Each structure stands twice: as structure tokens, then as C-alpha cells.
Length: 350
Ligand code: NAD
Ligand code: TYD
Image (cartoon, rainbow, N blue to C red; front, side, top):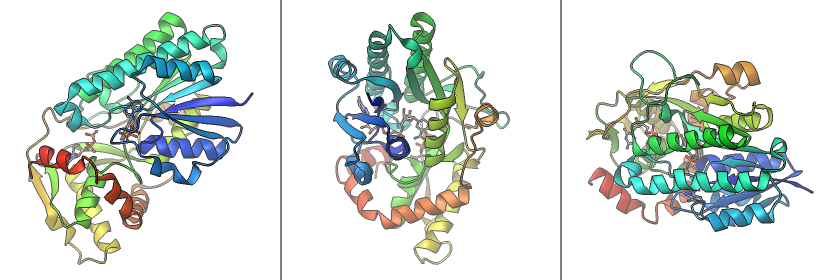
């Protein structure tokens, strides 16, 4: 029987890149994509592979135990790669409960179903939980997050992800559920919903709209190209050690203001604008509540033990990303045609 892998959240940003990678690279696996298609989920992201023989989409909500239980009962699920989540910090500040529901309750539903289904043969299965570096809290000017850094989440989003990580580990220790966890830094690339900094800025540049920078733009993030995250997930899924955690990061720290200036100059070149034209759109706005100062990942365990390395430099990745958004401007227009404008007005008071 074909080995079925359940990927949750496969219609989202990172999930769609991961689903594509697995469908193309592993024709012998059946890839089942379970996604509720929230505002962040978009089947258009997977148009190119939707008819592949080894791909199946199921629209469903991980917070519903019956849906999750049915999938485990009807398919021979050998592995789960769990990405479905509410993922945007600003939305978590506005509405924490949704994050508790999806990120914590949804994860427990999946853990329960896997535990029940795999109890007689735990060895030949794997529950892989995809998490974020934000669970570690906020760094000062020095230091990096390692796998040993104590958890110190500060936003409702990161607290909900931290809770889900703890529960995954609890199922490993309590029920011997075979699990692995990775915590990754900020991703960028094609198909990211334009509520996150980079696609939001790109969209605003296209429209000559102000680019909102929180506070003074001094906060630092460690940026990784989304396909390099997907490649790391592939490696950890196949070669990672059960019960372990792996940090994934780009060794690529940028202050928000410097990042946006670089983006503006790449955009000017690609849009044939006068050098400096897009930078004029930068506008400093009220800071995010509890805004974490700096994230930076020590990925040496993943690099040394599993041989992972990023495939593109940041300049290459940004260039690919800007070109993709220019070429796929209709994609942005479609994803912002729903509740986006309402969200944007509430968030930025414009
Ligand atoms: P995203 O918001 O783009 O996509 C999330 C997907 O999950 C969407 O397709 C959505 O429809 C689906 N979903 C949401 N609630 C659901 C539910 N109740 N049931 C089923 N599906 C549901 O998110 P992303 O940026 O692709 O992040 C994916 C995962 O990676 C998340 O777990 C996130 O915490 C983690 N992560 C993200 C980043 C990043 O920079 N984006 C970095 C590290 C880790
Ligand atoms: P974001 O893309 O929301 O990712 P995260 O908060 O998960 O790191 O934000 C990246 C950084 O950019 C973060 O420091 C907040 C900042 N930011 C802005 O300055 N302006 C914006 O409009 C947004 C969305 C983010």
C-alpha cells in the first residue's frame, strides 16, 4: 500500500512549497493536504500539482476531532507534517482565542488521532511538528537561539506555538509517540500572504502606498528563503532523530529598516523606477505591542548532523521573490480581494 503522508496547512505559504516538493520528489508517497482554507489558505498556490496522481486535498478543520479521526481511520497515514496554524502575530494580538483554538486544540486533536492509530506500531510512524523561533522569546544585541534556549514566548501567537511544542513533547514522553520538532526563523518567498512584512511592503511599493515600519525599524529578524525551509523539513522528516528538536535559520540577520531599504532598491530596479523612489514610501508607525527585539538562530545542529545548508543567498532570494510578485501581481490582487482591506484598515488605521 502507498505510504500516505498527511501535511496540514498545505494550502498556506510554507505548506504549499512543502507539498509541491514532496509530491514531485516522492512519487511513491501519497501526499494528503488537510487545510481549512482560512483567509491564509489558497489552493491557487498548488495549481501546478493539483492533478498529480500522488496528491489529494481534503478541506477540513484540525480543531474538529471527528474530521481528523476520519482521515486517520480512512488512510494509512505513516507520517504527519503539521503546519496548519494561525500564523500572524498582529492578528494574535487582536484575537488571541483563535490562536489558542487552532494552534493548541488543533494540534492536540492531531496528536490524539496519531496516538490512537499508531499505538500498536509506533516505530514506523512520525509526527513532525513545525514550529517557530518565536517560542524562545526576544534576544538582546548578542547571542543566538539554540535548541537548549529556554522557552519565553511573548505574543499570543508565540505562546500558542510554545504550548503546542510542549504538548508534542508531552506525547513523546508520556505515550511514546514518535515525534520531531523544528523551530524556524522568518521565511520569505513567493505565495506569502501580504500581511507579513515583506509581501506587504512589496504590494505597497507596487501601489505607491506608504510602507508601515513599526517603531524605529530597529527590530532584527533572521530571514530564510521558503524553499530552503522546505528542504530542511524534508531532511529532518527523513533523517532526523525521534524526540529531537532542530533549529532552522538563515544566518541572515537584518534590521527591519535596512531590509526594507534593500527591498526598495531591488524593487526600483525591477520596476524601472528612479533609484530612491520606493524608499520615499517608508513611514514609521506606532510600534507593535510587546514587539520582540531580535530573533537569531543557531542552526549548527541541523548543518552538522544532517548536512543542511541554504541554497540561495539573501540577495538572490529577494530578487526571485520580487520578480515572482511582479509576474504574479494577479495573485496578490486575488488574495487581497476578501477581508484584507478591512484587516489593513484596522491594523494600520488608514
Ligand atoms: P500561513 O498562515 O501562510 O498558512 C497557514 C495554513 O494553515 C493556511 O493554509 C490555513 O488555511 C491553514 N489553517 C489555519 N487554520 C486551520 C485549521 N483550523 N485547520 C486546517 N487548516 C488550517 O502560515 P505559514 O507562514 O505557511 O506557516 C506555516 C507553519 O510554519 C505554521 O505552523 C507557523 O507557525 C510555522 N512557521 C512559520 C514561519 C514564517 O515565517 N511564516 C516561520 C517559522 C515557523
Ligand atoms: P512579520 O512579517 O509580521 O513577522 P514576525 O512578527 O513573525 O517576525 O514582521 C517581521 C518584522 O517586521 C517584525 O519585527 C515586525 C515588523 N513589521 C513592521 O515593521 N511593519 C509591518 O507592517 C509588519 C507586518 C511587520
